[in-house]
Length: 214
Image (cartoon, rainbow, N blue to C red):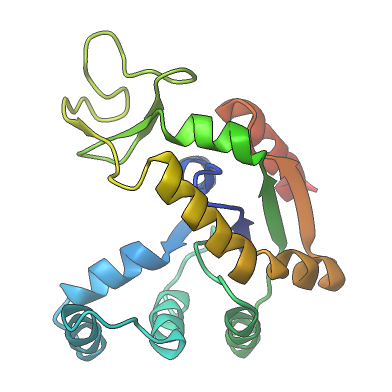
């Protein structure tokens, strides 16, 4: 099963992807993670990525698609979660062509809908475990009283430098300009399933599972 988690920054895509990895054996394909992995891999593609990133340039869609294709060539019976890709309509077309080339398709595109003001309140209270990336929130999911990550036992937590209102609103505007057109794109294809992305983590997870089980 192959799915896309679609939604603005801070909607909880990464959190839900990790749950799907743990519970369904799916593989999370995060663009950022793939680029960092490639940069340190020492492969031909990795060296190309490293050179581009070290020069402060943007990695092309062709390279990202190439990294995704490398992952698709492995044996992953649980399927893939595309997190952070595609971001634009040309990327969506390229992903569709790549999946068709490998004899597979998208099974669902889950749009995690949010209210901007509630999202700002959530993100400015967010922190993550420095060891495993588990996400915490001062109001909804505070760091345990013993100061240890419930997932890995780590004791160091950090906040992203751009988890402030001004930066988040800039990122939201970028999302609405470039990525939100994908909502109509996948709706027209009959792939789109919207859910409330601002519910409790387990409630959102159940909504996603209901879509996938159907």
